[in-house]
Image 1 (spheres, rainbow, N blue to C red):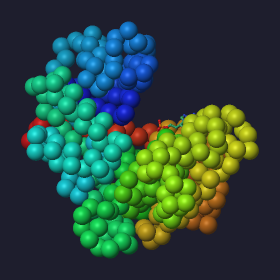
Image 2 (image 1 turned 90 degrees about the vertical axis):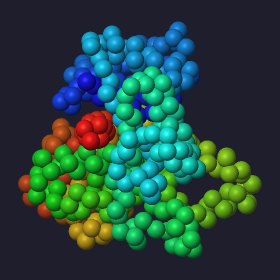
Image 3 (image 1 turned 30 degrees about the vertical axis):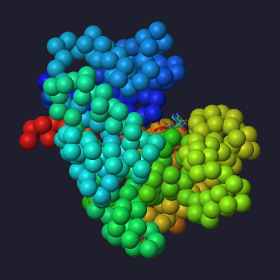
Length: 387
Ligand code: AMP
């Protein structure tokens, strides 16, 4: 029996396959669906395949899943998929834990598309495609919003007329599967820190931060959509809503044009005019790239102060995501502004960047933890089919 996990983005599918003991067998991804499709996969961190699918007509999620299935049949002898676990960006107010996806729950998730128009349709396309490709498998939905659903009301609401809160205009928070993984992992590495006041920073192309009190989210930087909070690769992060009104009324921009700009042309890309990719910005070392990086790290420090205030203090900080795990200069410049909070990093440990990076004297524990959303999904899927 195997468990397959799928994370369907607009032009990519990440997948991982686990055996019944939750040992990872293979993981990989297809990128460039509909344009320049490419498949890659690794076993025990060693590349087993990495090639173009240009001739294979991978034009949508269905054909991409067929290509994944072909790969799995070739690479995993005797494969039998008992369950497919899906990362679903939005579970609304209804889904605060993973569920088996049936017609009713899928309809409920479709109704949430207006809350996540750029992500939810791709996630659901993946569910449809997987249901056709693996008709005998149980489909399980795991939600990026679920980890945050128990946060206190003041961290969940906007100060709008209350009827909007009641109809679902709330601070949902995202990256919940990643936060679940790193806070569970912290409990293994350092139980004392994990039962305290922790700020986890998921810093990747998408970026957010979460205040975690004894393993439970009490607030996060992302709000109603995945636009709020930190600036990201191409997303703007926190923005005065008056700016949107200005763009609509004075600049006569359409809602679609504003949406496109806020999601795809802002953040590191918008500020640098160069790239959404931190490695490119670090290598460029131009004033424009420096400006974008300074804004990014400055906002992380500001949000860290705010989340520490929510928690009433700070015992540990976790860095994860592509930037959090790999970009030591970013971690350094975040920590250098936070001595007042009791944060003191160890320069050598920070350069090597795995596990503990705080100095012996630091009052706050600093940790780099490689996140793994796939294993979280697989664990939930196994639990649900066990029931
Ligand atoms: P993610 O969305 O989690 O895959 O993270 C992607 C981001 O991580 C991009 O901005 C990358 O440039 C950045 N990143 C990945 N590896 C490194 C690295 N070694 N140094 C600096 N940034 C990195």
